[in-house]
Length: 353
Image 1 (spheres, rainbow, N blue to C red):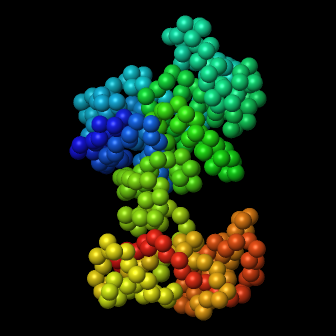
Image 2: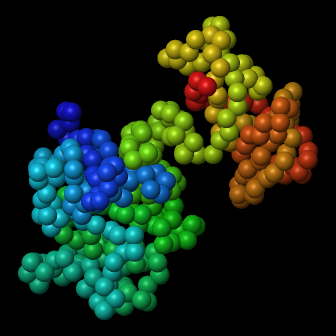
Image 3: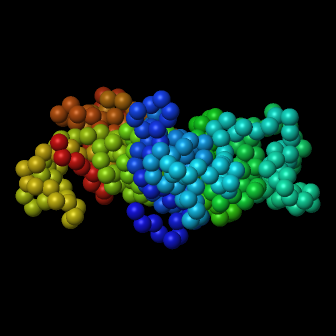
């Protein structure tokens, strides 16, 4: 497999099999990450995403394939460059901060090879970057979860690694804080120009952080692409089901590359090669269904969830099939009522039955 010269990290057909197991934990993992970009390995628990991160870091041995960092082969079945020689920084799930050291000492922990004056300057620079200058002398136990996360990030970035690895870095934080911190962390990483790989099971974190997403399932990468492409153009049902909320409804391909379903008839994308008469399933996401009082198409409100600016309505179609719709919250319809809806498919996602 050939990789672009701009790629700082390259994985070529990487498989990992743990001792005592016959089947690989991950198999045939390939991607190239350009310098300065952020990738997210996204998938459910047990899909192998953390194993990929451990292989990149040097904590798990590669049994097949190769890993290159900055053009240097660091892992294969024959080569295992030690972690400390790979120039990678790591932010662990539990942050792994030293409770007996204050904030500044934690950030400077990996800088002992520098002269004292340079070490102090680098620690000061990093604390300024993460907005914790005023907390330099604080004990770790005095910090909030978000502050501890920033200390861990500053410590990982302080030695100027070629590659930053983040293992579920927001999992210990409350849901309301995660997406905001994901955006902050992305900005910090971009400010330093560091290339990064993050593992997460949360698609919202991945969308907030990533330039590239590797959607993983069944121990493989199912799709590699931008957040927009993986969401709107999923390559298979596994990816489509994992990303976003949605419902599948039955449809049929008509002559002239049209689709017929109980919500109406629609044109297929020009690139589609579906044969007339084929039975398909159409993915309808909440943002595809618009509330429209003037529409002749009606749906029955069977459930609703208040989300502040929107309600997420669960709607029963005449067939009994349920779909979802995001509706502005000033349209507060009671359960059991019928509302008008229309379909607005800017990105038509469908697969043959």
